[in-house]
Amino acid sequence: MSLLEIKNVSKIYGELKALDDVSLSVEKGEWVAIMGPSGSGKSTMMNIIGCMDKPSRGQVLLDGVDISKESSKKLTEIRRDKIGLIFQQFHMVSYLTAVENVMVSQYYHSMPDEQEALEALERVGLKQRAHHLPSQLSGGEQQRVCVARALINHPEIILADEPTGNLDEANENIVLDLFRQLRREGTTLIVVTHDPEVGEAAQRMIVLEHGRVAREVVNDRFEA
Image (cartoon, rainbow, N blue to C red; front, side, top):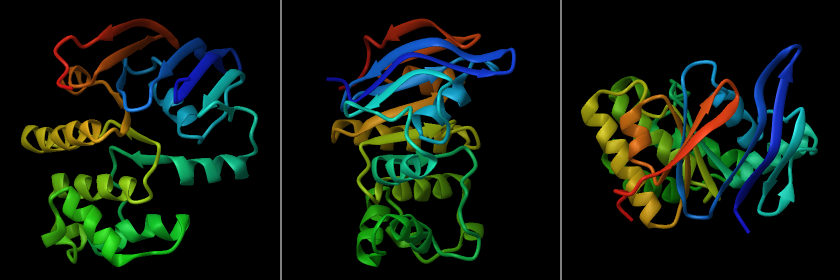
């Protein structure tokens, strides 16, 4: 059984079909890139996978459980417990240090644990910057804090929306290397991107056009 299965999902706003009968699956431990131009349905897909929205039609199964009909409260719980989110905009609290920003995610999940948060920052190579404010960190460092924040509650899926969109090439490579490391450790990664280089780093690319799956591309050069 796939970790995530999307079956004949449509999302309709009035006469607009943001997603139109989309089906796809993601296996546990797989790294999948969802790609496409603006207006292709990438953001809508991310919102549905991330339990921030529900489809108009179709099913979304996570670990075999249909989450497409759950209440907003239940979706919040599923997102908190099973999904780690990384955004293009870092969404860090400006007056909290790096380690405190990671601990915020713990607060909503269970209990804050500074030592565990420090270990998460060490995992992304930032333990020495743990007590710096966001304004004292580079863009690449802030995104790595966001990766640590997404990992802290041991989610089943890391869902990243344009995670390198605000980064220069050097920091983009650092984040992609982190994703490679996570993939080797068995983490399931779903990365929404328009950047071909980011997409080509993934194990499989799913290309959306006009709300439909236009094609799937398996990366024969993927580094397992």
